[in-house]
Length: 109
Image (tube, rainbow, N blue to C red):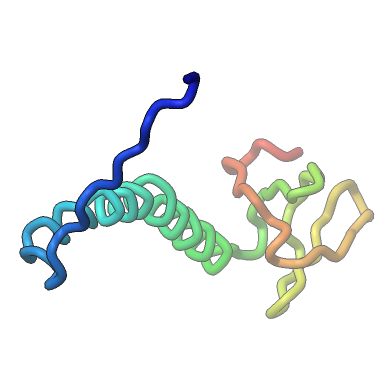
């Protein structure tokens, strides 16, 4: 009374159909990966390249800011570490990768 009759549908013929229908069913997935590449992956790679170039261009006497907010002038450089002068006679050693910004000349006094 309350339940309607259910009728089975006939299954499509075996053989896979044509190639065009399978390509159109994969098109949204391919488009999603293309958009993901241009929106997320490519800008991140560009940012990493710019950061690497900035760290390679560091020189003694540059004014820098670190990830922890410490501002100082580079007084000595090594392969992995920098020595920053944060005040007269006060020097700290930080990792080179901790530098997030090179400040304009004369901004640190």
